[in-house]
Length: 323
Image 1 (cartoon, helix red, strand yellow):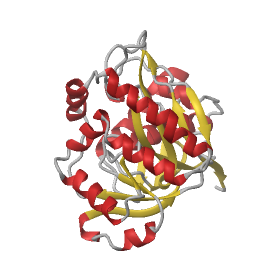
Image 2 (tube, helix red, strand yellow):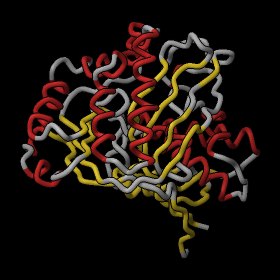
Image 3 (spheres, rainbow, N blue to C red):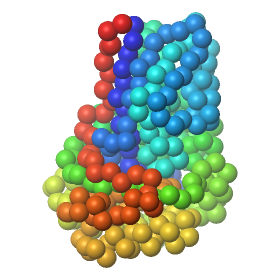
């Protein structure tokens, strides 16, 4: 049997409680994307094989093999996988590529053995979703969600997912479908991950309670109602307010002035635009009107990606392929 998976990426708008004094940490708001996406075909094989039609790091290939071996040990699977990747999600760019890749391929491996397993359970096994629960909660159904983070009974420190030893599921507090378009731009710049990302968490957290309370108010009084009421203007307002709070402002500062200047230049074209940076970057997402005109006026030489896309409300798509 050969299975084909089409897997959406995601945008993480914010982590709204990086203080933890009330007994929970993290908590996020974000949505699935039609593009970029992971598209792959998978079948069982005697030997572990990966063929990728796009650039793929040795790091993620190793992570995939380790995930397969972990499932073999846990469930007694005997065979390996033959994996053909037709499209991939850019790594370390703010799209949640590692979580989407490891969860979907591991799910497909289990499905080839008729093993039913949830993405949440796979997240616990593979230690994904230890900070943001967006990738795990969005992969199945897509859309726009608000998730509730993690209890400090189980997670004591402020850490990226890669550093969390025991992962618990972040509950979905709200999910809605949303049909807005957006523009994605990824500037040519450094990437923040690994030790640099861990050092950032250590340096900036815990964030003061008054800042967290303001961020929670923006989330609940501006961003979430605007999605429910289909009010793009208010949603853009919320995006811009979030960039001014300590957590997101500090993430943007990791790129010196490159990202902040770019965001300011875009907003100077039209102040009604909502311009934000996903996760720890560097992808910038833009909501509003006349997005195609903005895209056409950008200097292609300065960017790795300039792409108009939309929110994905379907989640992962799985089909059987004729052999």
